[in-house]
Length: 237
Image 1: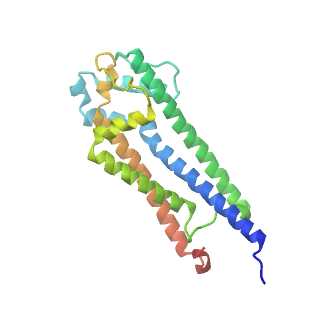
Image 2: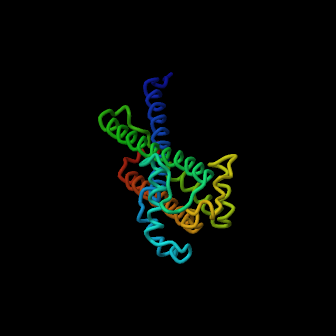
Image 3: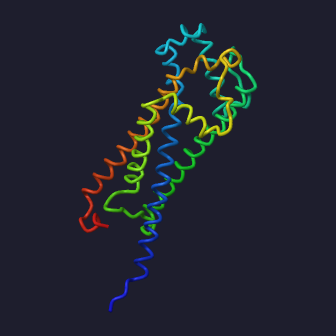
């Protein structure tokens, strides 16, 4: 009677665990990277000052709108500890909401930095130590399964948001700002809401989802190409 080699079984469990960790880290990196684009790439907003006709809609000049946005973002990403919206008025409730936003933005940036370093370390260790290589289930990389999972979730979100963006917007705020209503701005006391129309947030959503889809497509294509070059005996694992 032949007994299974415990060492081989142990290696399989170890490589499987590493694959799961890889998949989770890649998923978190992908989400945080996509979210960071509209946060960090300020020209994305500047272009919309014209396309959304914010000067005509609000009566504010381009420089007033840009300065207000820059001051607000500086605070939200931790470049400044002093909240401000340029020449525009803001209230205590408005300040409180942007403090909550700052917490979420900084969390996203920390996740992005943390996962970036984690992936770099894992790739280096994988190349140097054969035992730390992740298992390829059915010949596909962990990134492939992260991509499939993310595409499934975010395609569902897109369908729900497209059917009723207003409702999706409200649900989003209830999830990320539970028990609070300070995100319901009064444009007379928190004038910055005038330069942040609903279409701007919809465009942010498009950029984020588009970024996730693009990265997932790259993961999937890379895995498929890698699988084609893999020995047949390894594809069935």
